[in-house]
Length: 515
Image (cartoon, rainbow, N blue to C red; front, top):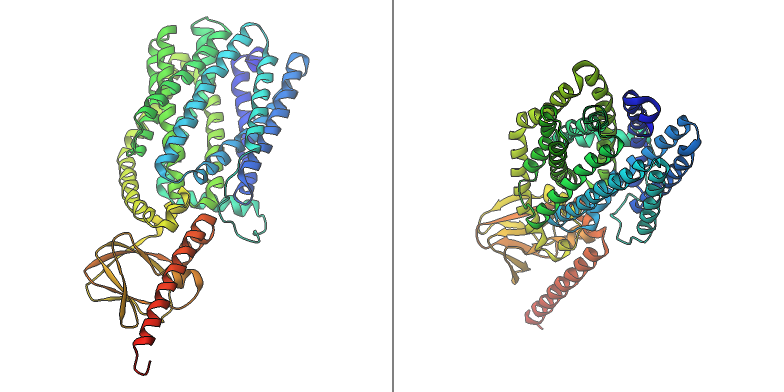
């Protein structure tokens, strides 16, 4: 609205582009810091920089030069663009399961929706009173609360390379981009999200023009239509929270992308105030569906050490596509009129979702299979305590092998580079010729040699046809040794097994001739 008052619809589009473009270009080179250091500290600094920039913009908005206000808005946007990907990368480390992460993202979505509803509503009141600086001041106050809350966060940080490798901004960014390119399902999600955020950028400009030039409703209607998106997201998120989806997040994400744009086609045909409010609310429901899938699925597919960079690439693409959508709406209004532009932009994302629907369904199948492997690993005490992204990566590395009855899995005294867990069937643990234990589904074995760099302390032989899950040394060792709880659980198990082997060795010596 500040830009609209100083230069009309064209200024809104240009300022949207100028505000987002630096964020899209700068943030990726700063975000790798969050993959090296404590992520909550990055969030605190992001909040403080935004607070200072918006506070100063609020002071200058009253009588200062417009260019200074725009420059401060750019600073706040760059810092804000960094906040969400780092926040998204931090959340999985605070959760133990994908289901809990989905629930957390639902709650975050509800809080975002409440903010998207209440923020513009309060802004509408301030705008109706003619006080743009009050809007800036309110945002700065909220950021102060965020910084204080984040400063008190305590959690166990995921293991990091020690000492950390030299900071290489370009190489670090390229590593994140490669991770996305190699994980085709993440590329699919990010690509469809780009269509959604392009629409979001267009909606920013279209809403201003729709309210002021088609509905002739004034500045406050811009706030109420934007608030309708927040209200729809709040109601949609609440409905999802009451019946949380355990499967099919990929397809729900696709539905959300389609809902973000489809209602614009109807708004273009019937631009009445009441219908527009309801249809904007439907956009909000789509927003709730998008957020749950977009911030729950990638941590299941990408390594934790790359998550901040991955989400920053996402956020940069969001900033870029929002900017492009904003300027495209300005061009589209001039070319097709406001109604024609609404129809054209509204049809884009739903068509893309229809084209890629089969791949979204295949993604859901992959995640269902991953859930089975994660459940198996969760049965192992030393792995059950791991945070969600770590155990997801272990499940991704899990190799399944079939062993016939009577076959030896490994021999006592040989080198050991693999950890195993029984998936089905039974196996015998032998110390020398003595059977000292029977392993059943869910039982782990082979951890002593892997974690302590010693030879196998016993022989394991299949007593029935069985299936085992195998994890190579490096991913298993890094995961277990990297967290205090898993490390303690593994030490307890190792000591128990070594004590049992020692006891059987004592019995063997006692029973031998001459003893």
